[in-house]
Image (cartoon, rainbow, N blue to C red; front, side, top):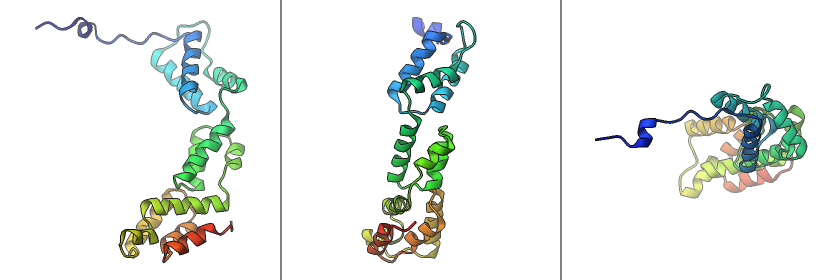
Length: 189
């Protein structure tokens, strides 16, 4: 049995990048994904590491990412607002949002501008408790209120999601869904 022509050759190594192909990669990336300047820069550095460089001079992924930001292809503030809003709707707290934005290369000022307010943070903890059926939301399935070990596990999960201890306690210890919703609707910080 003979092997097919394509299997005899094996995979070809990818062609090294030059200025034009690096720019094309960057354009393709920002066209497909919402990204930050730092994430684009990391992507370009990774691709340079994988494929190598065959262009004139040294590659400048940092300069290319900055150029894309200047051209408006990338907007770190809009990216931070979008990412923070998405995480809030999924039920994550301020600490978790801060960490995600830090990893994405958003500067301190940008992270502070999109930090959730008190009411937003309360709605986020409510959303996560509802989604995961923590505290009084277990009653909606016909179950009883969770026992102490279960509440402690739920409390730990809310803390890992980035919520403050007092918010997590309020949600886990609420006796009814109405109590939890009333607490979340209050506008205190």
